[in-house]
Length: 285
Image 1 (cartoon, rainbow, N blue to C red):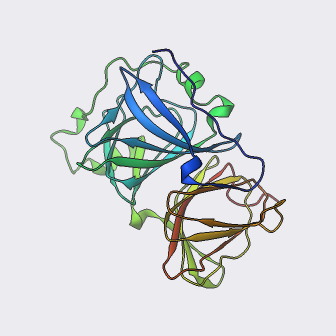
Image 2: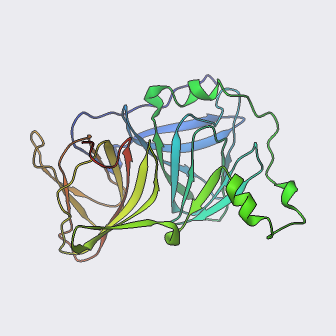
Image 3: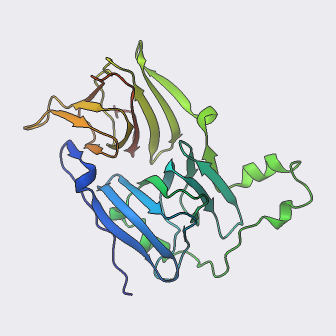
């Protein structure tokens, strides 16, 4: 099978991305295995997609598709149990629904669906593929010929060496207790927890309680979000044409850097979404 590039849907203004219209792509080959991709946005600043594996499915790497990139990544588990492995170091990490895995550039990674449920993972990737950080970069890195999924050097000294292993780890599982929390001004009805925030990418999860709006906000980078539960409204007062949007679970939304926007919950249950902003979360002065 010949190598085909993933599509790169891009937007120039604040845009609703309904689940039904998301760009679909089958990633992989006979060596890597195949991954079901839903690509929401791939601008010159951020890349957001949802990828899926069947129960007990997996992806690895091949010469055509080496899985080591020049980008920071956050993988948020929407459904199932995700095993993320570094075949170069032998690390294996497990994340369940609502948890995330974070790693930085030059980290080889394989993925495994470890339960009887279909796996769905929301992925944020920055700098994005449009800047050359995906396949072209990957092919410039030393190739891993033999994959390992065990850290033999730790056998016989566990858990005594756990702190040392954590220091050397190339990946980290981010659970509820690891989030960096922030409140939207004085309004306790809007709560955000950040999974990771680097010089390239910030990824978090926001809950907007019933009847509450967020404060108007804008970021120094492009933002792309994915609604996980509830009904979220987005107001973009400076947008040309449409300024008021209604999003449901599975829908996405793109907001360009520097664009004022506000989140609203007009319903009777919390509205929850996961978002990525790249490169800068805070507005640049």
